[in-house]
Amino acid sequence: MSERLFSAGCGHDAPAMPLAEALQRILGAVGTVAARQRLAVRSALGRVLAESVTAPADVPAQDNSAMDGYAVRGEDRGTETLRLVGSAFAGHPFSGRLGTGECVRIMTGGVIPAGADTVIMQERARAEGERVHIESWPETGDNIRPAGEDLRAGETILGPGRRLTPADIGLLASVGRVEVAVHRRPRVAFFSTGDELRGLGEPLGPGEIHDSNRYTLHAMLTRLGAEVFDYGVVADEPAALAQAFRDASAEVDAVLTSGGVSVGEADFIGRILGEQGEVDFWSIAMKPGRPLTFGRVGTAWFFGLPGNPVSVMATFSQVVAPTLRQLAGENAAPPRRFRVRCRSRLRKKPGRMEFQRGRLVPGEDGTLEVESVGHQGSGILRSMSLADCFIVLPEDAGPVAAGEDVLVEPFDTLLR
Ligand SMILES: Nc1nc2c(c(=O)[nH]1)N[C@H]1C(S)=C(S)[C@@H](COP(=O)(O)OP(=O)(O)OC[C@H]3O[C@@H](n4cnc5c(N)ncnc54)[C@H](O)[C@@H]3O)O[C@H]1N2
Ligand code: MOO
Ligand SMILES: [Mg+2]
Image (tube, rainbow, N blue to C red; front, side, top):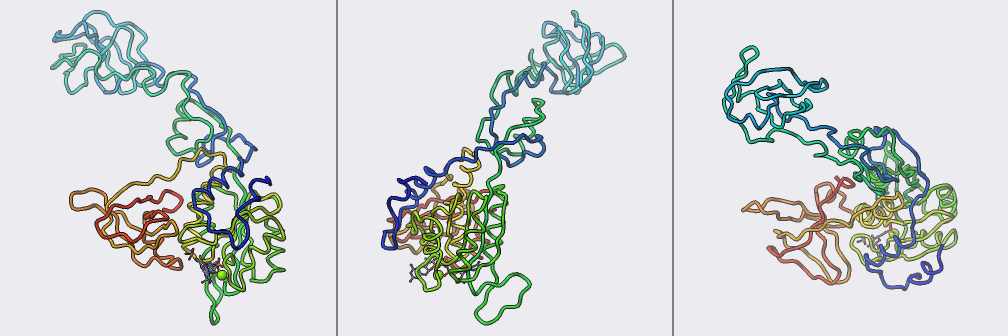
């Protein structure tokens, strides 16, 4: 742990840190999981590439036909009848060379025979045995997909830090890649804290609730491709929490908890983190999510997420996800935010950057607009379920009147 990281911002009287500053601090401290492994291309979906991949040859390797029809010579343009001299089906090239007045039957994907430079689609021609009558000539060069049109030999097609998408998997296959080097997945342990929490299938006593945060966390971690270690529910008891901190931090890159980070008499996370590890900051100027706590325990990074279910999701998406993406070696872009008209009136007090839950809708003229999903309390998990974007309101902003522009951040695959 660097001196710099833990030299400032600690203590329960420190002011809430702006989100951007907190992120910069964390990302500056957290490196990348160095270990790599080689995986079969088929198994690499969602993994982060740890090498640069170049195309060993042009794709497609040869000029080929975009249509079923006849390969011809542009010089013969205007000739009404051509002589059929062979065929070029996909996988079965024509081995000869086209002479004056000749054509070759060709199928989509068939290699353009030597001498040919144009394909006439079969709807524009009529064959009678060896004679092919051309009804209308295209421009010379039409209906040909040139070699290297998709990829050029030597061209970098994917770079380190790329999280592989389905298209990338296909692209790798298209250049004949069998295996790729990827980063090891980040290992993340997590547990819920709270005497009131009951597991699924257990009846609820007075004042008890079902533990939902552990399920949301598991789901979001799964979307990020983390290797997860679920340590269950831990009671609001310092000794039990201290033990859980020790158990969970062994051999993982990060530990996440939910609950117990505020100032209540059963909120022990900050204290235990201080005893078992180090606290960097414990308050962030974001709503929901103010008491987000960050530090280090053993060799793992620690994130104490607030207990409120929406606070868990908001802090995870804004702070934990970028951190885990970086740990995983991903070259992640900052969140994409767009300015759109807001249909709803929004309550907001200056002080914290807010992540209100919204839904994107087409306006009267089809332009994008956003509306609030309603109740914005940080205990209203339904607001996340109904939403498809965050309405991002800056720290110093006040209320928003209906019809004003706001910034929206559409949910990506982490939250959808
Ligand atoms: N006097 C103050 N009180 C509070 C402040 C404050 O600044 N001063 N901040 C509020 C804010 S903002 C938040 S956010 C919460 C954070 O609370 P904790 O992280 O201490 O979480 P808990 O007190 O343990 O629980 C809060 C809330 O969430 C429910 N919860 C907890 N875990 C789960 C779970 N796994 N699944 C579902 N729901 C869970 C819990 O029952 C509570 O209702 O503090 C405010 N208070
Ligand atoms: O900061 Mo808290 O998450 O608003 O309820
Ligand atoms: Mg509390």
